[in-house]
Image (cartoon, rainbow, N blue to C red; front, top):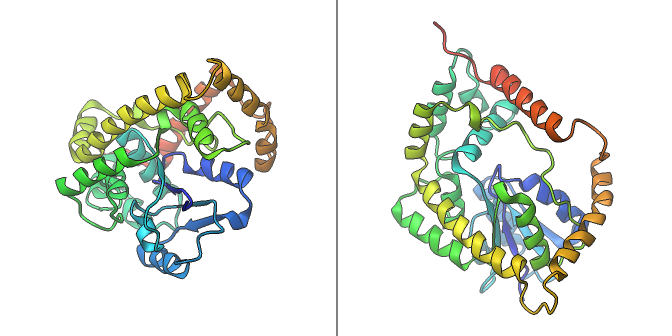
Length: 296
């Protein structure tokens, strides 16, 4: 059986999953596919006929990657996120990193938030990114309803589709499918969420611009609900209805070793209500730092 392929769509908690992959696989058991399309294709071409030793293939690579590797078929897994949240997070990432391809374009002096968003919507990289990846297109391509239809078909064929908004449940299901022993039932490296600062008129504009991703996300929610019912609520073959809950508890105990990988401790930083307030403060600070207010 060919190794499963995890399609890491940017800004969908992939960094957390990569940490868990490090904890569950040896370095030589994962084939990483990152870079621009030509780099990904070159790496894939170099591994045709050489994938039997890998237990997982993952990266910023679209559905259909198994064809680049000479594989007749594949098991696909991915995470999707609320389209507006993912879009704004992608922009914030660009603004934070001066080496990003589009940093100069979006971080030009004097731009208001609306101007930054408008510029981003003119770049294929940011527009309906989830549909691009799941349809089998790279983010440099212009997509249409045809690609949306392909993406929906691919999603239904996927072995697993997780949701960032239901990260803990998604992670536990994915861990069960892949046989992971080490998991962390929470997101790590969470950046401030700018969604709550989005005014209604801007949200309406983004809903229209990201219509394909909204449609795909609606399908992903249904896919997740069905998979959760099958894999979590009443696991097939389980003679004991609480067996999966016990497994979740056992997996939680092993999170300390992964936290150690990150050099973190459970008592570090604010928690609970204080943490939420801290994140809101960070969100405000990030907004003020990276997105200039319109000049009057």
